[in-house]
Length: 197
Image 1 (cartoon, rainbow, N blue to C red):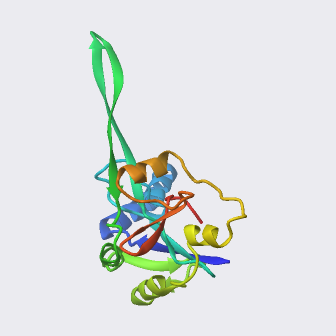
Image 2 (spheres, rainbow, N blue to C red):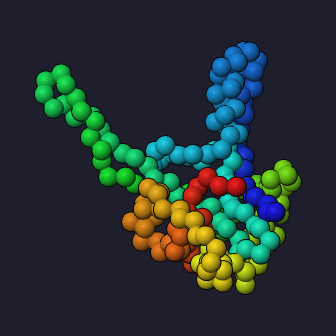
Image 3 (tube, rainbow, N blue to C red):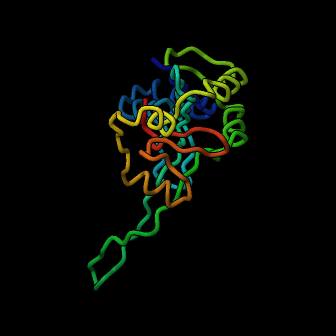
């Protein structure tokens, strides 16, 4: 059993006003698009994306150290290049890393302390920011992470989470656990995924 925690980005006044206008116009498609933009899960598609909607911050589980969501995204870059007159080819440029916040205690604290952020749990209960952060830092500090668990239970099957994203994390210099399912930064335990529950 565990509990997930989220940051909700409070929409800007002009966005709320625009949504009201769309409702007054009864523009179903535009209402739906604006609602998705403002209230669904944030996933950046470019290096200059502004966070909107909600963001999964992490999960606490009994017997395990708090597991932060790194919210570190791999942004694929590219451009079209003319290879001969009238014919273009898509060229992959180097990927960039999109950090929603630095993977440090100070980075996460600064993010959740923003005025436009509310913290809530998976039961849609609003959390006090200070209490949440204190809980996350102190949740089962002496408990399991994937390396300590597999060291204690060496006969249990070790799942391997190696994939393109874990390769990306390693290319950024993060030292992942043996099975690639978590890593540490500034003493905080992070998942090797941005999509977990």
